[in-house]
Length: 144
Length: 202
Image 1 (tube, rainbow over the protein chains, first blue to last red):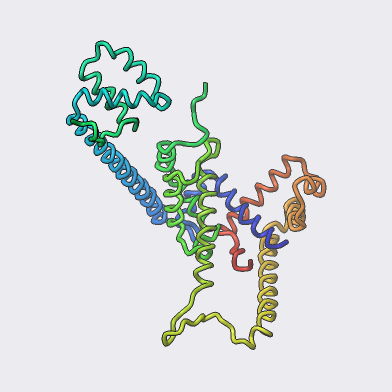
Image 2: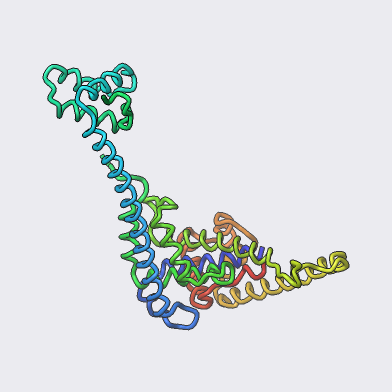
């Protein structure tokens, strides 16, 4: 019973600290039993430090993600340069045979461009399918 | 249409931390003291501050948009202290030392002590804790000697009465209840700025 009351008194102290106006609080700084100016300076430094550390961590994470993306792009591009257009067309056709996995947009684009597609158009569609994982860019079996 | 999410974003959290005033920092440091950061968790108030800042920045705990800055940082600090206290107690409880290659628990009792000593120790500790609590309650009551409303409020609180019962017993209006409660809050804060170390008698 008394313990509950004493805990309630501590909660009252906390509520009063939250409700008191800024001047009242600042007038207590450096008084006995209250934080010192040095404590407040340290707290400010700790906040800055936490922000810097977090910023650094986020930056490192973004860099790692970007590096991984660049590696995957470079691999796909390398494969693209090595693969003849005729092979790319067979890759696309093979991927289209599994039309369930094929996004509708790509399907329509390929059908529309079938008649007049340039080598660049074919390469672009082939690259999109590689990025979607529908064509394996490392698969050299079909390369003559 | 309201496109805001229910929780604050990282940018908003960071901006709120940066914009804390000197008075807010002083409040939070003092509140972490009142919560017993050092004796319970072995953390200085600015260490709690640091932990709280890290926790909110990593978005480990979602910060609901409707919760104000200070109450959120107070509750996050309470959770940091409570979690650290559990770890701290575990470390102390499992503390052991090695003598001549044999691990010895310095707190282990002799076999004969287990029969007699624990109950005596427990009783003595309980009596001591009760006496300390009575002394603390007395100190609070002394602050309101000439204030009949506050005395009635405290008597009811000691009897664990809820607000509705206190309104009846002390014949308070809702406004009178709030006024008395506010008077008590401010007076105990000024007289006992660090509150009472209740964890010592838990």
